[in-house]
Length: 95
Image (tube, rainbow, N blue to C red; front, side):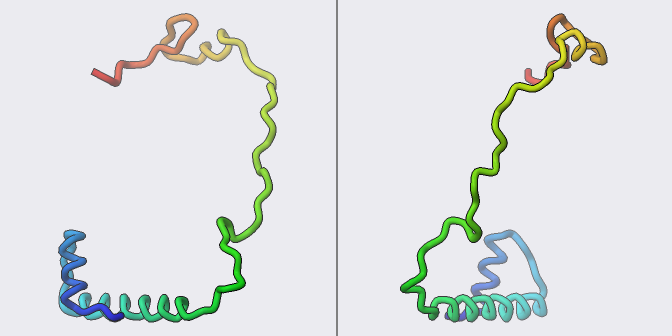
C-alpha cells in the first residue's frame, strides 16, 4: 500500500492545513515509509504470542486509604480572603 500526493492533499484538506509542494513531497515520502514499516510488522509471526494489555506487569500501585491528621475548619478558613462560615466564599462563575 502506498500513499499518493493526491491522498496527502486530501488529508491536508480534511485537517484544514496547507503545505507547499516540497512539504507535500516530504509528507508523501514519510507516510509511505511508515506504511512500509507497518507492513513489515504485519508479516511477523505472532501465533504463539499472547496479547498484552500492558507491556510490563503491574501490581496494585495505589496506597491504602488511611485517615491522616486533618486541620479544623477554622484553621482552613483563616487565610481565606472571603468566607461565609463554615465555607470559602468565591465569586460567582456561572450565570
